Length: 324
Ligand code: PSU
Ligand code: MN
Image (tube, rainbow, N blue to C red; front, side, top):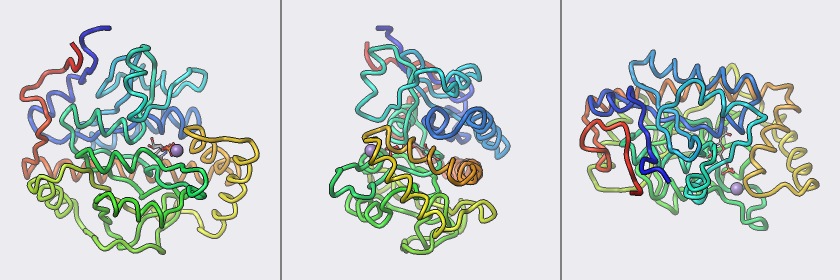
């Protein structure tokens, strides 16, 4: 095993040192969430959007057993290649991926862990994983929720994926003490659909106000994550009733094909894409872009407040050895 297992890209290390605003991005959405070649186009565009806002993007993945914070374009291309056997990594899979020198895409949970180690406070994704429908039978509850309960990173999202039981997802976030903040909404965003059903009591209308709340949360010493949600851009949002039928069909197919565990979410997303003539894919990409933009503006606002991450390295060092 090499002694360096976390490499922070120079541009990211410099921005962390200068405290000028860094946004983490995950890689499961590239490898398992979107079809090729839209996945690589989207991955590159998300990085550009963050740079246009004046922050620095840090896409996170495990590349041949090394955790990387900030990827080279060729590494993004490897993750986007559907023929490559890219593992889907959450907290439980990290040590395995490193020890077997695997190529792995990080989910929300693993991305939060690595972002926190690197000293990054803000992370943009599409929609977190949560409590699956029928969880009372399958016990399928995403590791994302538990990670939010223990890792101090703010996740900018469009809520949780529409394929889930969103009411139960919200209940679980509440039980685990995870603040759910709405950006320009008082409802829990429903990923592909505009959220209009489940109220969330904490609404903010600017990045500055959100940054201030993150700052206070940290000052209070609360060491858990925060979920920030905004609705998908309205011109791309799908009709909830129409989508509900499609999700039902996709669920039935998954059941019939005995798809479980970490395969389930990618399977459902693919089925929904096919059944909506890829309208769900366009919506997914649009919301990812909007979330990257919001995350960058929150990261900039946090930088002005000097929001620090106590686990951040004390100096700009682009390689870190967690295991000697
Ligand atoms: N957001 C998207 N598409 C995705 C994901 C998020 O727009 O594919 C990924 C994230 O990596 C998240 C994962 O952590 O889906 C959830 O997977 P599961 O339900 O198996 O925990
Ligand atoms: Mn699951």
